Image (cartoon, rainbow, N blue to C red; front, side):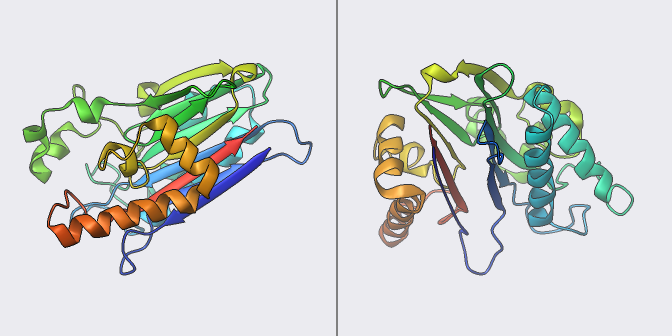
Length: 261
């Protein structure tokens, strides 16, 4: 199999809050991938002395280790335990009840386990692409954030009221129970040619700039690599800034991972 991974910070003045890794056991059987997109808090107090990059590294490391070492545990259980471990690591020093406590979107995939399936989990607005041997591409999305009225997210206060709340949207923060909110599923490995995971900084090529559909996006990943897709996004972002048409962040942290079986 082939693995390809790239990540790029949105700004050289800020640390990259995305986190990504893959695990391939020495036996050659099975593997897993983890992609996190740290949620940048607005300026001001958010109850944690460590910061988002520390959080995503802790949570990502726990997810990678647990997904490989506990093949019989469902991915929702893996996420729940990883959140608990991460929370315990700074529970005594930080206010984990703060609505802006460090948090992240999650994409987790695992293959070659006892079931013989590709298992997947998606929480919040990163995306997992699953390609069949025939070239059909299915996007696994948690679209709760997209379904909220735009006006409901207009201010930080209104967005905070919907964060990890019933009727709102969910991220991995300090509550292990949020794992039950994730989008999960499984696909027989015979029906999988490749998988790809993208943070929303990389998925802009499809979702913000509309340069192609998900199948075409995966084609770019295969032909030009993960860095090639990110480079395309950076060119589009820069053009939007020059033309005065940029929406949201001019540049966002961007991460892409491709696994071909």
